[in-house]
Length: 523
Image 1: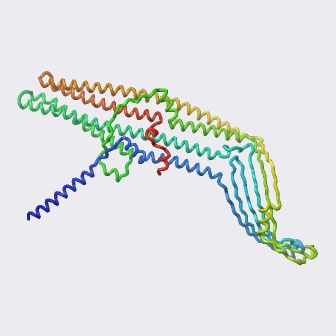
Image 2: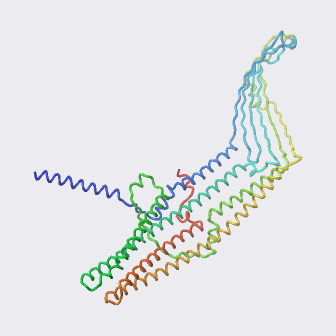
Image 3: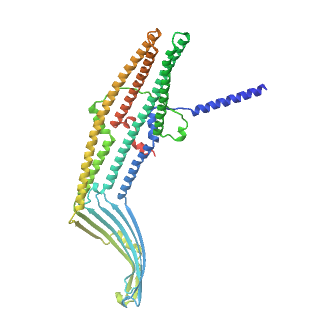
C-alpha cells in the first residue's frame, strides 16, 4: 500500500512539474534587442515586403529591354502547286502544272549604333510540265547580307539603347525608393522599441512610487494603532495609494499598446508569435553625445539621402529624354547596303540541235540541290548595292512639341531636386538642434531627479522627527516619480532624435551594414 501511495505521489509530482514546465513555456517572454527588433521588422514587415518587390519588377523590365539586342532567328517553309490553263500551244496543249517548294532562314541582329544586319538564306525547287524548259526541276539558292544604318536620326549608342537606359534608371530609382522605405521602417522600429522601453520603465517608476505610498500608509496605520497619530491623518496616504494604483493601470495599458505596435511592425509568423506572451526589451536607453558639425552633416546628407538620389536619377532621365527628343528633329538619313550571292542547279535539258523549240529532249544532265547551295556559299556570282535614303518631313511639329515637353520636364525635375535639397538641409538643421536640445534636457532632468531624491530623503527624515507632515512627504514622493519619468522620457527622446538624425543623414542602412542588393535577392 505504501508503494502504491509513493507511486501515485511520484506520478502527481511529475504531472505537476510537467504542467509547470508547459506553463513556463507558454508564458515565455520575447527578449528583444534593438538590432534584433530592426532585423525582424525588415524581414517580416508587410510594407517592407511589398516595397522589396519593386526593384525585382524593375530588374525584370531591364532584362526585357535588353532583348532588343538579342539576335532573331526566323525559319520558313512554303509548298505550292499551281495548275494553269495554257494560253498558247507552245506552253502546253490545255494546261500545265507547276510545283514549288521553298525553304528559307534569316538571322537579324540589332547593331548598337542603331543599325540592323540581316543574314538570310533562301533555297527553292521549281518543277513544271510547261514546254521548252531548259532547267526542270530547277534549284535556286541565295545567300544575302543586308545592312541598314541611320546616320542622323536614331543614330548613336545611347539613342539605340534608350529602352535599356530608361529601364536602368527605373531600377536605380526603385532601389532608392526601397532604401527610403527601409529607412523609414527602421526609424519607426526604433521609435516603437524605445516607446516600449519608456512605457515599461515608467511603469516601474509608478510601481516604486506606489510602494513608497503603501509603506507610508502602513507606517501611519501603525502609528494610529499605538495612538501617536490621529486616524484622520491616514486618509491622505490612503487617497494617494488609490491615485497611484490608478496611474499603474494607465501605465500597464500604455505598455500593452506599445507592445501591440511593435508586434505589428515585426509581423512575426503566427506560430512564432504564439510562443510569447510579452516583449521584454534588452537594450537600455543611453545618451552618448553625438558630435557632428552642421557642414559635415549637410555634406553627408547630400551624399547619402536616397530621396535626393532618386530626384537626381529623375533629372538624369529627363536630360536623356531631351537628348532623344532633339535627335528626332534630325532628318532621317540612312545608309543601305546589300551583298548577295545566288546559286543555280537542277536537271539541265538538252534539246535536239540545242534548240528548245524542237521540243525533242536528247539528254538530261542531272544537278543536285546542294550544288546551288555550294555556288551561293562560294560566292560564285557576287552582287552588291550601296545607297543612301534621305527623308525630310515638311512638318515636324510633333517632334518639336516633344522637345518642348522634354525641356519642361527637365526644368521641373531640376526644380524638384533643388527644392528637396533645401528641405533636406532644413531637416538636417532641425535634427541637429533637436539632438542637442534633448541632450541638454537629459542633463537638466537628471539634475532635477537627483535634487528630488535629496529633498524626499530630507523630508522623510523631518517626518521621522515630527517636523513634517504626511501630505508633504507624499507630495515629494509624487514629485520624485514625476522627475524620474521626465528624466526617462528625456533619455528616450534623445535616443529617438539620434535615430531621426541618422535617417535624415541617410545613414540608417549604411551604419548597420545592410545592403539593399541582399534584401532584393532574398525572396
